[in-house]
View 1: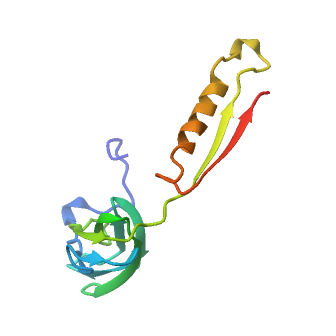
View 2: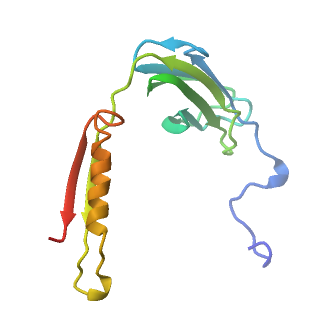
Amino acid sequence: IVMSGGKVEGKKDLREGFAVPPEVEIVGPGEGEKIASGTVKVKVKVKDAGGGIEDVRVYHQGRFVAGTVKPKEKGEEITLSYDVTLLEGENTIRATAYSTDHIEAVPYEIKIKSAVAGKKPNLFILAVGINNYLNPKYKLDYSRADAEGIVNFFKTQEGGYFEKVYATTLFDD
């Protein structure tokens, strides 16, 4: 648009710079703390550093678990709480926040330990093995065997990685 002489409407002028992102701190639980239960209440303190507070996010083991989108007045400090389900052993909790210009704060990360094993997940499989199609050019030899092999493999993981393995199969005969 700019190269063709057009004007970009509604965009921030980069020459004005960007506002400073908020400051983030996990105030509970503490670094290295041992948690006796399978869940923990993570308390995140976010302080505006000049650019406002628009979005607060919490990650567990690198995966997004909770967030709050709450535009705040400039200069404000807020403390938010999030419930996080822990895994057995070491758990990494990371919190971050964004300014109203969508500039990310320096993330704050802690490692805590949980002695309680979380409940193992169930696995649901839909295995489809079709060897014979209406068009004879698409005749396959191992689709059914592959589908059965996948189901048999995951059935051996029942009680190990998975609490229960539920399999539904669909074959052409």
